[in-house]
Structure formats: C-alpha cells, structure tokens
Image (cartoon, rainbow, N blue to C red; front, side, top):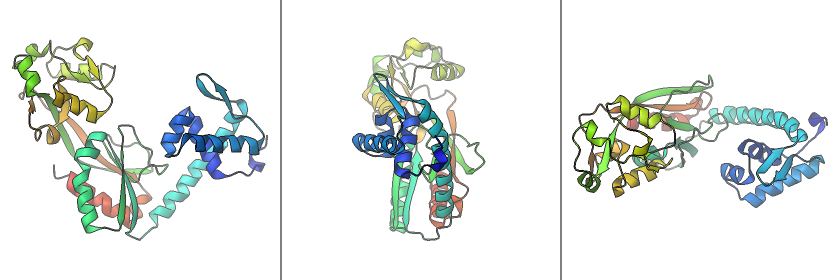
Length: 296
C-alpha cells in the first residue's frame, strides 16, 4: 500500500503509534490519558479507514501485522515532525500565562516540588502547573513534559541541562525496627537485617556492599519500584531503606542507620528542550526551579 497517498486523522494515527509502542491498549490509554474503549475505537476506525488489519488480537495482547509494521515507520516520522513543530511554536511563546508540565521522580515530586510550585503560584498565578510524578524517563522531545528534574545528564543533542546540586541519601529505619534488631552499630551487625529493595537486580546490594556492608539478596525480602511506597514501608518498620537526607531527617520516629557510613550522592539535573528554552514561561519556571532546588 502507498501510505503516502493515504490521508487520515492524526488523532487516530497517534492512537495507533502509542498502542504499537506500548504494546497494549491499556498501557497506551494510560500514556495518552484517555479511556481504553475510546482509544480502541480510534485504532479500529483507522483500520477501517485504511482497509487493513494493523494488529493481531491474541490472548497475549496485540501484535503488529506486516501492514502495521510498514505503517509504523511512517506514523513515527509524522509524530517526530509534529513534535518539532509543537516545540518550535512553544519556544516562540512570549506570554507568561499558560500551562507548564514538570516531571520528576515520585520522591522529588512529593517532597521537593511542592514548595517551588507554591511560590510559583503566588508570584505567577496565570501559570497552570501539571506535575508528572514518575520514576520512568519521560520523553521531553515528544512534549510529555516541558521540564524534567533528573538524576542523570541527558545525552540527546536537542536537550539542555544544568546540574543544580547533589542529593545526599542515607540508610534510614523506624526506631521501632531498630529496637527490634538490637540497635546495630557496625556494618557486620546489619548482615541479618531486612532491607527494602527497589527491584530484583543486584544494583542496590552491590552499592551497599561497596560502603562496607555484607548483604545478599536474602536481605531484601520486600521490594517496590515506588519510592513513596519504599518510604512508607521504612516508616512502618518493615525494614531499612535508602532515603534522601532532606526527607529522612525531618521525619519523627525514623532515624539514620550507621550514621558514620559514607553517604550516597546522586546528582540533580534540570533538563528542558533547547527550543523550549526560548519561551519566557519555561525560562521563568526553569530558573525558579534551579534557584529553589539549588538551595539544598
């Protein structure tokens, strides 16, 4: 089929693109912020419009057909072009009023961003703010967010970044849990303690062992990918966790574990798209985030 000769609705094409990239209608609906039945109707309408089957519907989800694979390359190129147009238009916007989307990890979204957003709302009430709290890397080039607070420096040439500081994290536990395990004072005494992990890899185990601990995977009986759930588990006494100083030190009933251990440092980078950096609104919010987050 000559895809270039076909004219179709971009909303339907975008529904197809995100569904193909996410692998299921439910995941695509979450990514686009729409109801799954609505998304499904858009994909079905595109298939009807083109007269081809784009997905094989099976028990294990959706699989692209050959026609779907061919169309995907064209629609992906359209999406990238649409993103460049949107970025260029947004970058030329000189009005302060309007919307801004900031993405950060769950822990940063919950504990670092609220004071900054409160100041922003006081000083610039015409700016509407959306916070995307996610531990996944949100795509700035696709306008999934305007500004990102990240722990790594971006490598894409279209993105600009500024390091605004280093976050210090330490081991924390509820006082009730430390009492239960005998208030350990040496790394060796933590060999039988329970830790709360983030995933099933050995990254956390290896990192803590480099600090002088002697842990194995058996020391991590509780796992969660959510930073907020991780923190709540620590507070509840389920085990020891890694928590930023700015969060852990101000919580009653929780204290540092082995305070003489070297702290863990994570850089904080503020990132935006190069074209968005010419927008007065984005520049204002970017500078305010850099000022406020850089204080710590």
